[in-house]
Every structure is written in structure tokens, then in C-alpha cells.
Image (tube, rainbow, N blue to C red):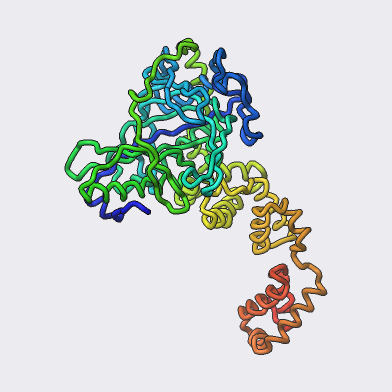
Length: 500
């Protein structure tokens, strides 16, 4: 049964939301955090394991230097102070996907602390989010639930895949975020989008949210209006899309408000987000740091940095995202509104890659902001997660420019691409979707349309050339949209003796 909720407006009339985010970023190193097992996605379950990642007795871990450098780069990009000495600790908890029965993480001595990031909302408003820390750790394995629609609730049993166990993670933890008000859900989405943009820009993560490369734990609490004491928080775990983060935060604000309004207390717990019902459900009581019994990892030496190492990595940082956006906007010639729409739609990277693959800026924007965004909305995913590659867009547009297909056919082809039928050229050939260019066939189709519409033909002869559109439409219908509309119009006017 669903939790009772107030409306969003009712909740905000009585309470001020306070947010906090813990974003986990999987690094794209070749091997895992503490051993030489491959760090690869999609392999057979339990194929990418070693005695170290399985936590077998007598094994010793070793720190992945590339992962440490990735953490330093991310810390610098977030404006953090890089610790001269950081340490790993054992975070003790017992769960099937944690083969060692503890997670190697960082506790009181993280690699990076005290940063901030400016988040731009859809209307250009900038909101500064303070970063408490960014620390290194390893990922857990993955439970595959059988039955119950793949969720733990209702599953008959679960299988454990340890391929992900030991994959390098960086966890970015914010300080409590106050003052967002009604824009709290929007800020949640924009923050995760900004972190994803940064790690992708740095090249340290594939940043594919549908694969879990970037996951967000969203913390929500409410303060009654006029008070300044933080309320009890809940943590919605492992939300893996920007749209879902926004929805989860909105739902929790409304749910918290209803609980508090009823006179009950908020339970400090983890919550599970369900995209199908757009609700959260209770997970487990939320543990505090003391419950994890942290202690320094005895098998790993501290990570020691120096100014020379840090400055070398700082020099390797790419163009900051804000500067990149300004440069791309100028290069593409988009207006302020056009570019803001592109950023808000999350398709800036896709448009850049499409242009690099051979399309014009106008063509790239037309497809990513038009038909591709429409299809993504229809399927409730982000445009970049739809499965359309920049190369596909370029090939589709080339077919249009060659006159082999028109825009209407191209939209059909795109849907067949999504269904896995092949490349645009292959689909056009296999399905016979090429534009009808045979003059004889077009002439016959025009004759038949004019014969069926004598009153319209008479209007055109009388000088109402715009009426030709109705005949063009009839011909397009007869040819399943595969006629060249421009050539059809020329034939209509020729046959009726009217000058265009």
C-alpha cells in the first residue's frame, strides 16, 4: 500500500526541504580498486574475479594508482583540498554482495575535502552546492533477483554476481543543502547532471547511468517553517537516472510532509525508488557511522601526495564544463535559449559528437532536440540513453540530402533503428522505404489524384495555387509518404498548365 502524501505545494507551504547527495562514480580503470581482476561491464557473471575480490583468506590488496589519480583529478575539479595523507578503512557490514563482509573505503581521512560546485538551473539561476568530501572505495557485487519483476520485494530467490565487487568508486558527499524550496527536485536533477558532466569530461568514468556508472543516494529531510533545526532524513538509494532523482526527491518531500502532519515521526532509513509507480518504499534502518565499526585497513599503507604530483594532475585537467559550454555555444551559433534547451535536455555531448561525425550544428540540433527527444520522452529515458548514436544521425541526414528519403520516412527509419533492425541505409533497402523518384510512377499517381479531386484541380487552374497542397497530400498518401513532395507539386502544376 502506498504511503500517504501531501501535494507538493501543501508540503512547501508548511516545511522547508533540506537535501544532501551521495553520488557514487564508477571509474573506468582497466582493473579493480585493489586487485588485478578486470573492470569490465556485461561479462558472464562471476567471470571477473580473483581471490582478492572474493575476499578469500590470506590474500593482500594493492591500491590502483590510476584510481587514486582519478580521485585527485575529481577533487581538483570540485574545488576540493587534496589531503597530503589519506587512509583506507574497513567499513564492516554483512550482506551477500560483500564477499569480505566489509567494504574497503575511506572514513576520517578522505582523499579530498571542502569543495563546492555551481549548479545552473533551467532558467539560468546558479545555486552553489558545498562538497564535504570525495573519498575512494570499492563497489559491492550485484544481486540478481529472480521473480518479483527483478526487485527484492517479491523475489523467489537472488543470485550473486561478484564481477562488480572491487570496482573502483569515488563517493562525493555534499553538505546539507538548504534554501532550494520549490526548486529542490530540479536542483537534485541538475546536481547529478553536473557531476556526470564533470566525470565524463575528465575521462575517469564512462558515466552511463543506465549501467550504474553514476548512482545517487538522495537524502531528504524537512524543517517546519520558521525553525532552523534539521529534521530526520531518509536516504533513497542508488537512483540511476536524472529524471528519477528529481521524482524521488519530490515524492519524499510530499511523503515526509504527510507523516509530520499526521503527528508521527520520520524513520531514519534507506528507501527504494520504483520508477514504475514513482514511489519509494522502506528499505532498512539507516546506520550511523558508529554502526559500521570503522577501523584503519591494516593491509594498506596510507596514500601520500605531494605538491608536484597534484600540480601535474591539475595541469592535465581538461577545459572546465562552464568554459566548454561557452565555447560550444559560440562555435555552433545557437541563441541563448536554444543552447539552454540543449543543456537542459542533456544532449550537448551527443550534439558535439554528431557535429564531429559530419553533421552541421543545425542538423544535429534538429534531430536531438526534435525526434530523438520525442522518442526518449515516449520511452521515459534520457535522449542519450535511447540507443541512437551520433553516426546514425549523420547517416540518416545523408540519406535525406541525397534525396533517397524524406523527413517523414527518416522518422520511421529511426524507430526501426531503435528496434534493432540495422543501420538507416540497411533499413531503407530492406523495407523498401526509398523515395519514389520514378517519373512514370509519380505521373500516374498525380493523374489519379487529380481525377479523384476535380473541384480542387479547377481551383488550381483558376489561380489558387496553394490548393495544390491537398493533391500533394493525396499523392503522398498513395505512395506511403515516399514521394518527393517538391517534384509532385511541380507535376501537378505542369499537368494543369499553371505556372508555379
